[in-house]
Amino acid sequence: MTVTPHHDLNQGMTRERRRDLAIDTMASWAMEGMEPDERSLDSIRGYVDGKLTIADLLERARAR
Image (spheres, helix red, strand yellow):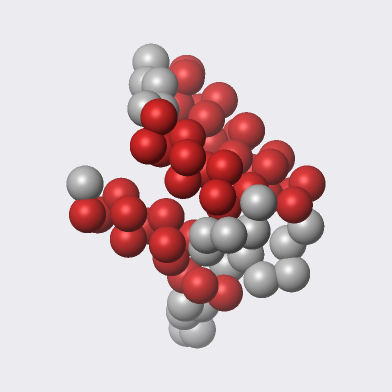
């Protein structure tokens, strides 16, 4: 089995695709009764804008 490193998961994705994934993720959270805090929203914006990778998001989440 080949394991894809986290940093490769968003290579080649358009901003629109990253935005759609972020919306889907936050919708899933809302269904569970969870709301992102401002720090999480900043991270999500960074991901959508292509400034952060999935690996960056995971690292930030683990550091909290």
